[in-house]
Image (tube, rainbow, N blue to C red; front, side):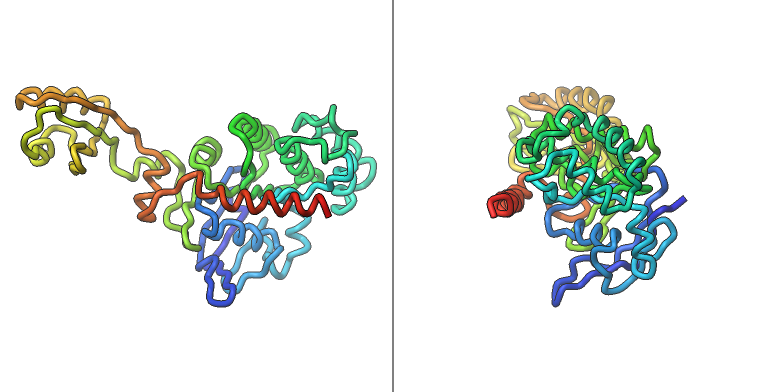
Amino acid sequence: MAIIETKDLTKVFGKLIAVDHISFTVEEGEIFGFLGPNGAGKTTTINMLTTLMSPTEGTAKVAGMDIVKDANKVRSLIGLVPQDLTVDEDLTGMENMWLQARLYHVPKEVAKKRIEEVLSLVELKDAANRKAETYSGGMRKRLELAEGLIHYPKILFLDEPTLGLDVQTRAVIWDYIKKLREEQGMTIFMTTHYMEEADALCDRIAIIDYGKIKALDDPKKLKDSLGGDVIELALSNDLKDVTEAIAKMPYVIDVKKKSEIYRIKVAKGEEALPNIIENIIKMDLKVSKVSLIKPTLDQVYLDYTGRSLRETEGSREEVMRMMRNIRRVRT
């Protein structure tokens, strides 16, 4: 059953089309991911779905309610963990939680119990009475996550939930996200530009680029859509191009040669590899280098958009965001 539905959802800023007529559904209880680089339209989409921004065109429903006509009802059912850290540095973790509870009109007795539950969930109970300014980046992100859960949201929106965190802290956040879905059946809509994050967490992924959805499916099917594994090999005594000969071998789907490397797309890579090497040896050629590459989301992104998505893409934006946060704390 779809808990989020969009039809031709669009947002235009002047001459810039940030989100361009996108249509998709999110099923209840799934972790749904938007994968794309900074500027692709991920945050703008979340801002519309969480009623922070009105669409220019198109419609969207969250839990059956229109994001424009029923904005207040939508807000009462959702939680949001934004990209930028919004915790109050001058308050303790506990005080931040009480502030959030009051903003969501959670009754005092209910809030008290809920705060203890969510702080335990994100392992911040022991640090609850410390000021947030003493927290590490990972602890602050976990506090943000706890704040987004204070009112028992039906749907949790996570905008780049691990942006700028180290690999170890990122893995911890992943565990919390999985736990929320497994133990509470929560629907989670997340954006990311980290390939491994989308692959590890999401039931389905929408690849978004320049405001358009280029592909949407579960990670395995997206990778399978590439049509096979890839074998890359180099020959030590390659005096002529043997592309045509390799193309006729069993399991081979396609062959391309770039510089001295043959890039061979094959079905069933583990079976194809020894067969191809055996046939090359029969041609009195020697293999000097060989590797078997399984399809990745990076290759999927490249296939659908014509360019590669790399984690370093976000570095400049991360630095700018960090500087904004620092200036906010100092002022």
